[in-house]
Length: 246
Image (tube, rainbow, N blue to C red; front, side):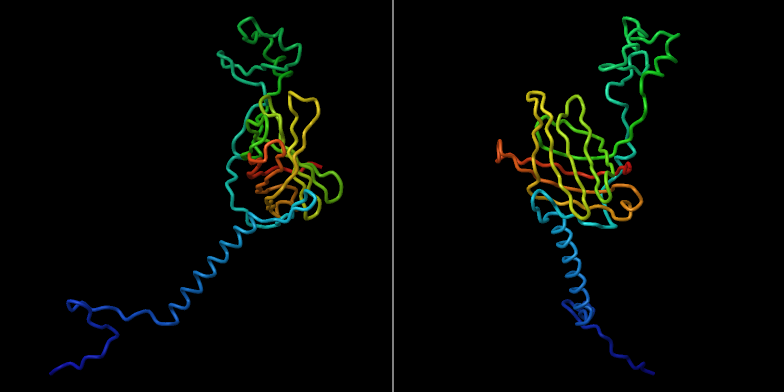
């Protein structure tokens, strides 16, 4: 007895190979809509991270709960500036140190055994965990790993990066409500007066949930007016995560 064959949705292709039926109109439409939405989200995020209205040095803050940057730098730490290990594996101070500490080391820089306890009561060897990861171009800048945030009055927050032996400029932020005033302050070794550079463009995103819990988590990218040499781009960008001090 011959079996009755049920028609299928396959057609014969070249060389007799069976091809699947083409995608339905509904499936193609769904795929195209999905691709369009993904493109819109990508373009929207790029716009948020590249365009902001700057007026009188103020830039609008974008509050978000989804900052996806890499904040693993907060697991790294450094000793306070001027603290290092000598060849005897002792943590010692080199630079601006308490006056009494100099008499507690011999001429080779080794701490006298009977002075070790007293020495470390004078010298701060705290592990300082990093609070900012950033890149910048400004005068006398060789990097920084720390930023401080302090609440001063109501909805006002002041932030500034730490200087060090090599870095003599710092990023300063004044956050008031939904706006931020970024500046670069140069404490030059050549001139006695500070030089301040104001923001020309950029963006800043702040995590709203962290902020409400007393922690500043942000990503930013600022450009600054550079009157001395406008052809060279002056900028400061990066991510930061630090506790807000009262």
